[in-house]
Length: 141
Image (cartoon, rainbow, N blue to C red; front, side):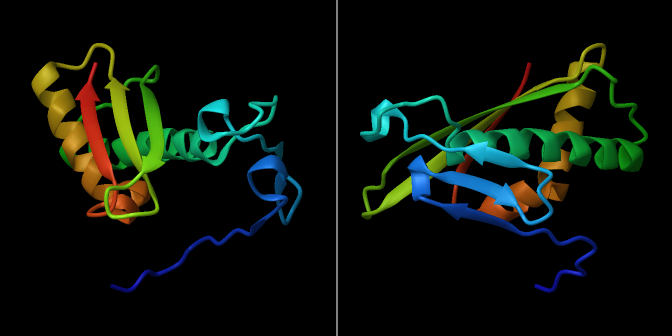
């Protein structure tokens, strides 16, 4: 598979899950904290799973808009995607993540909403990156 890269960004982290991360251009900076459920102090910082959930949610809305154009369906302005990301030990060893996306498309017929979500799931870069590696659940709210 080849990708015709149109945009590239760089971010760095120091200190791991209890450190900080920032983009090279300084537009985004975040303090990181390990959740208590993973043995950390659960401090005020964000964690990588939260950042992944936020990124996947935003990216999926973009994919919905592209899919809407292809399917001739108007994506409502108040569309919401809520991503729930889980982390834990894998039966094969190491750790893995899960993702569940709950998509709200107010005013859109359920059948059209389901078609739109399925099409977006084929377009979204996060969905394509995780396909075959991460269990992703899709729910139309």
